[in-house]
Image 1 (cartoon, helix red, strand yellow):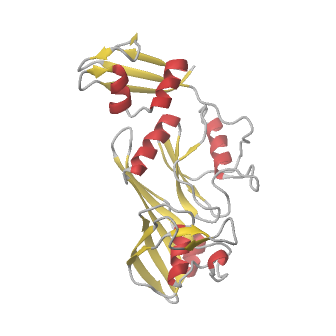
Image 2: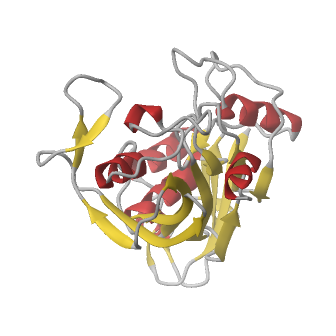
Image 3: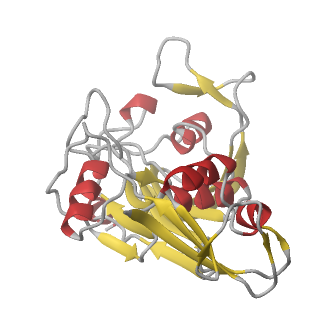
Length: 289
């Protein structure tokens, strides 16, 4: 039994191997897996990767079937699905649950809920998270239904083809600006990060700031993706997220006020330009009244 099936028409004559890797974006490792446990057809006939394809040939790739980890537990936690097609899924993660299992949170995570959802829709696949969010960050999380799709999204991200927008709440008001300050691990903590000259380059764009009394709602986009980047950069400016006690925020919210508002990208399989949005959560709305 196979998993994902990919069909493409050849536009330029080449070796099948080169067509699959260059035109279809199949990695060398993944191609080896297909050769071992999948199937490659040209015009309906099995072929090796040394076969020379011609313009107009139809190439079909049957990827090996995927199975989730045997130790991963399915959860019946309901999901809020924002977008879904045969290749990917986008959900609205609530605050207070981790994205993937860990030693501290082994079963009730978003990934466990997605695995339960896959069972309900009769999809046999592993969990492939495209963008993780901190436990207390809410909003858009993208997942690939297959390893090949996850690989294509990874390449898209490397090229800057996935833009994510966040809403952050602070006390006070700051001007729109770009924060370019390197981030590294704090000496006294394995979790906390700080702005430090010997850290990794980190760039945060504050695109818009809207005042709601003593609270401001910031619209933020990331150029880089360091751990806790928005939280650290706002603390560096002296305006930590509301509720972010790790970085000096007050306790007006029981979690840090960060929400993944949307994600925009060209779908790596259809090339359609998509924007997936998650509504502002109710706890934010209460602070913005």
